Image (cartoon, rainbow, N blue to C red; front, side, top):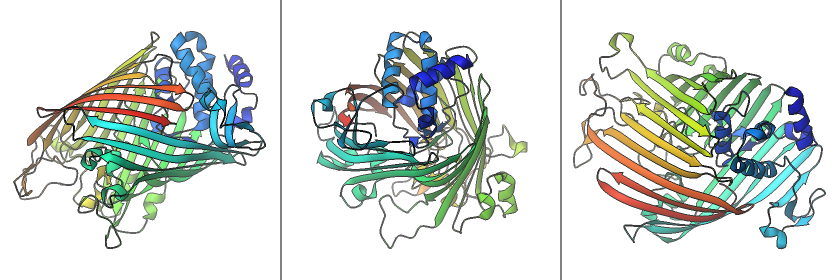
Length: 545
């Protein structure tokens, strides 16, 4: 099997070193990750994990080659999808069209090749020491609530993505986009959590701009990166409770070590403390410094993965050197530093008991007093998710997952030290005192994207407030509000308080019309405490972002 892998590796990509030098990240928006998760479930990849995203381009390339090595186990639709990704990642011979010529690429983009299956760039250069890729980004979309004609918006976005590597060790990535709302309701547009975080649009009624970037260095088993990007961390079918994309992109320094069957990552992130109100900005705004530090190590036997994770949140002081040590045990160190900070520990796993089936889950222990286990004591705070997904060779995936956050989880006596970034939970989008049931189905029809059907049912026990917004009953339902000693009960009941129920049903279809040009259609039904909304979205885009 090893000789066969090497043969296909060399046959598929004549310059193996060019794969090894692709140390830059592939953004989490790329649908290749969905295809890799399906392939992992089916046992087509070896000792892989999607618990931490984004991955390096070379890691994705190697997994695609492993899948190619097992092509006989794929159906015709999966083979078609795989071939699209082999072309996208230049693992087979493919022509590149560029707007600006280079020594390596001279096929004109503005020609009949614009709507071909060729890869399309503004500029691309490849040689033995460096690669440079510059892609355009563009999107136009219409959003509309079908049962309320006033709730609609027309949005447009343009930008670029620059990535590549230097001297076989340094990878770089820069993405910048700028968009505008051309028509419609701003309030409706702000219901998009990602747009809602953009100060330029929310506070200044201006355009909508985003940027992500990183520089990555790798030498043998060691890697180091610094950058601003969305990251996902944790095992699950649809939920990442360690870190999710619900919070804005964060700036972080990351150190890692990778060996066969063992991975370790340490991340020191600078995040925004909560302001008094959303959209507050300007030179008069005073925010204390806030940091979230995490590390995770995992072992990867052939049947899955087991990981251990820790995190610490501290604020209102300079960088703590103790937490800068990647081999610290944060829980004990936090006590030694006078118990001022918010520490969390977690375990996660991915088990593949039979071919096609994957069982994934995570557990976070925020705080515990062993003598009060099972009594409903408020300080026994925890979060968990558990799910299973089956990927069939008939061309579909079906997965189910349960997520639960106990009351007061992720909150802290110092509200600044809550597990949040810029007013949003850093992990799961759920508030404490919540549960979520999810059913997800993917149908692979030979496109880069599956046809997706997802149902979710969420229940949340919210704190009770009076008509003036004053807290009347605290049930541990807000990440920004811990217990008030002498006022609130020390015993809590899960889902107590103002019970909120939300059911969502989303059907999304996306296809690549020709390479690079994508069409997205989505319809979603939301029922929040008996009030129903039907939302639609139609978008055409160049590239995924």
